[in-house]
Amino acid sequence: MTEEDTSNKIADALKINPTTIERRLTAFIKKKVKEAGANGVVIGLSGGMDSSVAAFLCVKALGAKKVIGISMPEANVTDPHDVSDAREVAEKLGIDFRVIDITPAVECIRRNVGNYKSGATLANANIKPRIRMVILYYYANLMNRLVVGTSNRSELRTGYFTKYGDGASDMLPLGSLYKTQVRQLAAHLKIPKRITDKIPTAGLWKGQTDEGELGIQYEKLDMILAGLDLGLKPKTIAASVGVQISKVKLFVERERKTLHKLRTPDIPKL
Image (cartoon, rainbow, N blue to C red; front, side, top):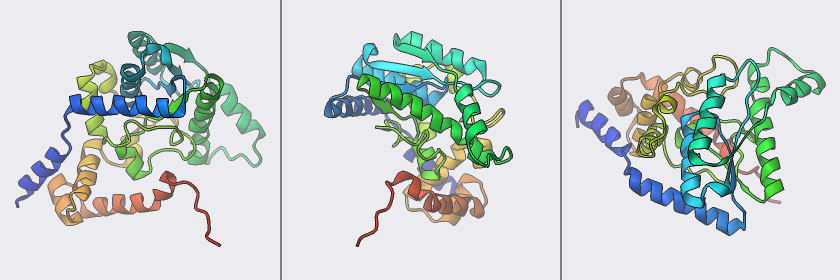
C-alpha cells in the first residue's frame, strides 16, 4: 500500500455520517438524564465549536427549557467576542444563559493559597477550569441537573484537559469524536461559521491556543490517532501524515502517561 493509499485510508476512517451521529448522541443525552432522574443539564458555553455543538445536541435531546448555558470569562484573558458568541448560541437555541466572571475567584485563590508562585504557568492556569467546574456543579446541584462536558476524543486521548476541571462532568457526548469529526457535525448542525473557524483555545492565558500547546494541528493529530486506531505502525503513520516518526511516538507516550486522567483514583487491593 502506498503512502497516498494509507493517507486516504486514515482520512476515510475519520469521516462520519452526521445524521446518524446526531441521532445517537441525542439519544445518549436523553438516556443519561432520564437514568439520573435529573431535571436537565448545565453546560459551560465558551463561545467555541465544541461547547456550541454540545449545546445544540442537548437542546435537540431535551428541549430548550432543560438546558442552561453558562459563560465564565476572566478579565484581561477571555476574548469578549467569545462571550458574545456564547450568548448568540444561547439565544439561537432559546436556552437560559448566564455570565459569571471568574476573576474574583481566581484572584482570591492567588491571594490566599500558601506559597503561590506567579511563574508556575500550568499550575496557575489549571485553577481556572477547576473554578469553572465548581460553578457548573453548583448550579447542577441546586437545580437537580447533570453537567455536560465538552471534551472531544482528540483531547481525551492526549490528556489535553484539566483533571477535575474541564475533565470533570457527568457525561461527555463528544468523547467518541475526534476534533475533525466534531467539525463535520458542527457543519451539519449549522453552527455559525464564525465559531467553527475560530482558533481553538482553552482560554488559560491570553494568546493561548490548543494547537500551540499540543505542538501540532488538529488535522494531523487526528490522522495520527486514527492511524493508531487502525493498527498502523508509527513509521507508516508518520510517512502518510507527513510528520516525523518522533512526533507519532510522542503522542503514543503522551497517551500512556496521561491515562490516569481518564480513570477514577486507583485503590490498592489488600
